[in-house]
Length: 150
Image (cartoon, rainbow, N blue to C red; front, side, top):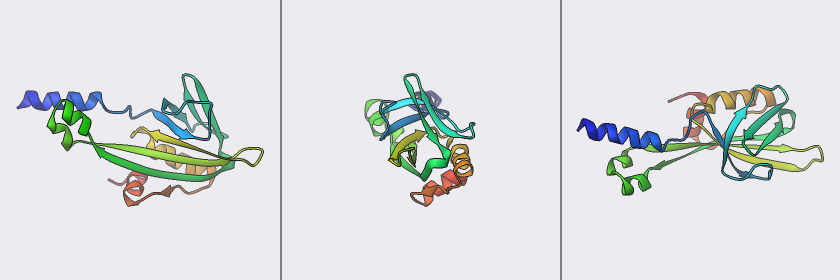
């Protein structure tokens, strides 16, 4: 039984998203391809920056007019079919951040990022502090996760 448990843990860990990374999932920006993994930086006082190997997106905090956070939870059905039914008992939760802003020409832009689980709370808190805007949570579960409740 312990071998089965260890196998299960190794398999689920292999399919886990890196908790310190982010992914650009789409929007109006073409500097980075959709579904590109990279990192986010909120350390600068002027811009939120998503950096990937082949490009970056820089969003001025002062121009942000929309912040939204939501989650999507799903069972690991594909893994269960391919490897072990035990995977059905694990959940993979995805954390999505949507940022809306206007550029210097008044054009509205939007970018959707999937955040790794270890950077969600600090990213949301920093964005609220730097933009002066409150994050809108899609539901109570997202609010609980984004604010640090379990």
